[in-house]
Structure formats: C-alpha cells, structure tokens
Image (cartoon, rainbow, N blue to C red; front, side):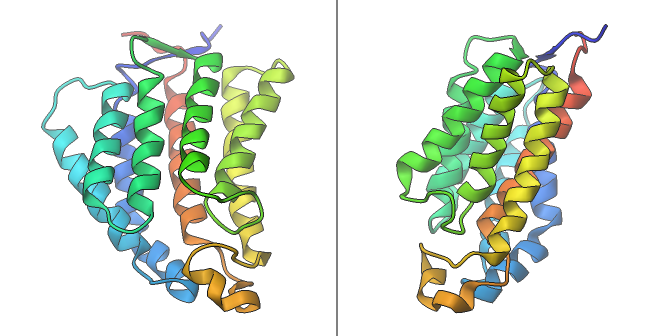
Length: 219
C-alpha cells in the first residue's frame, strides 16, 4: 500500500516545476491581466520565478522547504506591485512550517496550506467574492480540509484541492472586482478571469501534481 507521506527532499523539484509553469503561461497571464488590469502580471511573475529558478538550479539536493524559502525571498525582493509581497510571503510562510520536517503528511500539508492562506489574507483585505487570488486559494484549502474531515487519503485531498482551485478560478469570471485597479471598472470587470486567481490556480495544480507523484517514494 502506498504510504501517505512525501519525502520533502525529493519534493524540492516541485518548485522548479512551478517556475516552469509560470514562465510557460506568462503570455496567458498577461492577456488576462490586460483585460482589466495593467497587463503585466505574467511579466512580473515570470521575472521573479525565473530568478528563483536560477538560484535553485545552482543548488544541489534542495528540498521543498528550501525551494519555497528561496522562491519566497526572491519574490519579496524582485517583483514589484502587489504580487511580490503577496506571493513572497505566501511561499515564505509555507516554508517556515516545514522547517525541521523530513516527511510531509496530510496534516502537515494542511498546516502548510493554511499558513499560505493566512499570509495572503493577513497582507490584504481580500475575501471570497472580491475577484482576487483568494477566490482560488480559499476554496482549495477548504476542499483539502473537507477531505481530511471525510477521512480521505492524501492523494484524494490533493485532487480535491486541485479541483476546487480550478473551480475557484472559473468563479472569478462572473465577479465584479472590488479591489485594485480593476475595481475602478465596476461592472465592466465582469466577464473575464482574474489574473492573480489564474496564477494561483497554476501554482496549486503544480503543487498537487508534484506531491501526488511523489507519495510513498523513498530516498
């Protein structure tokens, strides 16, 4: 039977997968952002993630905790606007709760996800329905929590998180933006996805896929 844990050293490359997906989808993120924002979300994200990827590629055998810490520090220092502090703190705070652990189980993963959500909510005033990345992140974390309450396994909880994140992203299409530049558009902000929610969905899906693929693997 597959063990319901992930070796955190082996999970380090998941961060490089995140770097790759943000760079790959840079144009799409800019296209979304250009409809109701500045149009530079993909550019800024790709810059920060690329710089983090370069740092990590020069390191040997880094684990998920180190990978997230380096990514968080890089985003805090090298991305402008609101996304740098948000995603930087998101990854930094998730990395902190992995300190001292060699294995990730479903309960520690929940602590990690809540640390990320708390970081985002603590920095901003966004709540569900405001057409922000919280509309992707909060339902994803809630779905993970529900899977635990239903006594589902780790893989099932990750699948539930991934599904809820995608649904959360799609829910932003019919929302009116209440925060940021897009909020000035009022009803005209309805009808398009939110760029922050889109990048958050990419990151959560990559995390879920990467952890699932490594469940039960031994060093």
